Length: 328
Image (tube, rainbow, N blue to C red; front, side):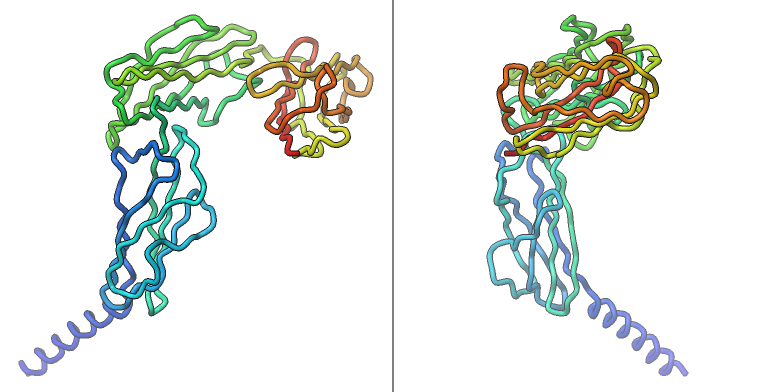
């Protein structure tokens, strides 16, 4: 009886080990960057893939959900692989992170995937301002008591100097900085100003511990009491993207007749063109409106490639906005 029990125990152990080995997947590890940051916009990533049972035959990488590309060196055919990967294209410098994904496959067809978030930074701090979790741009409507979230990243240290906030270019306060517990190169802050009705600008600046200064500014932020006139839904341009040929149709829906003006701006806030429509006429009538713009500035110049913003203004109050991409 004892022999039978020992035999069954040994059999169970064997089957367990066989099962684990038979279905073992590759294990991927990625070497972290210092503070998960680099100033190189095409960084080299290093890592290792280990498989206990089968040879690793494929290691692929991609950035920010793009196309998969094979890592180096090739060909792969071993249980332990040291790999490297460098993106083909340069990556944007920003306080928003990038994502590296690594996918490995062994000779049994078993696959594993591992990911790693990192930042591309410049010599100066990178800043990101959001409101209610969304990025803000010129023409955005805000409540009178907005809550701005500020994120700053730097590999030069952010402990010695204040994070300053300005409204309409007037200093308002030094924000309370909160260090990311997982990464000392990242700080965040919350800014809750009280704003009067009207158009405002927001500016945030900081100096890192090495003395490098960065500033982030958004102009044309609109705070207003409830307007009698509203735009229903999202104003739409067509075609979008616009290739610079022919006219652009701007469509929107109003809840009532109003005097309407449409102003077109570049991303820095400069007004390039203006269209005006009287209350009750096409462009200023209750319901659906579609107006035509020739796609040129007030001086008759063609627009360059880029993103442009158009604001819909009813009786002096911004009630809607849209974006147009020009790609020639």
